[in-house]
Image 1 (tube, rainbow, N blue to C red):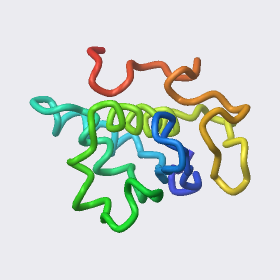
Image 2 (tube, one colour; image 1 turned 135 degrees about the horizontal axis):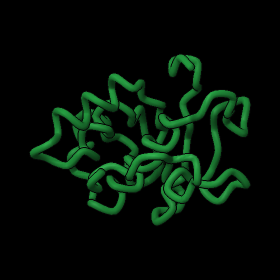
Image 3 (cartoon, rainbow, N blue to C red; image 1 turned 30 degrees about the vertical axis):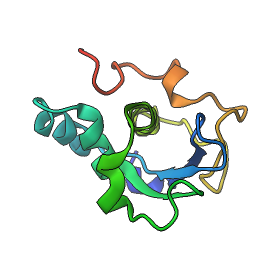
Length: 127
């Protein structure tokens, strides 16, 4: 599947109600690049630099993603990277539950972090 055909997904940050991140699927090349570039740093950082499109909510409004992404706390960074990793690992024929590409955490579709479709460990964990 071509990842540019997968619409971005907006998710509410589970531990920050009212704050949302828009995430996009990464191609295999982008995932490989994030892993390769970030061997000495956290893989999650490389994934976020490619897959975190935008954010909104009281905590994030007014702060450009590109300038403030590195200021995320560890819990939020790891959650977002795991979600990006999950939407980037869609199997052939699997579709997002919403035609708009938008869902909230806790919706009927399982969050990527606990999804059974993931075949590789989440970002930052040894393979």
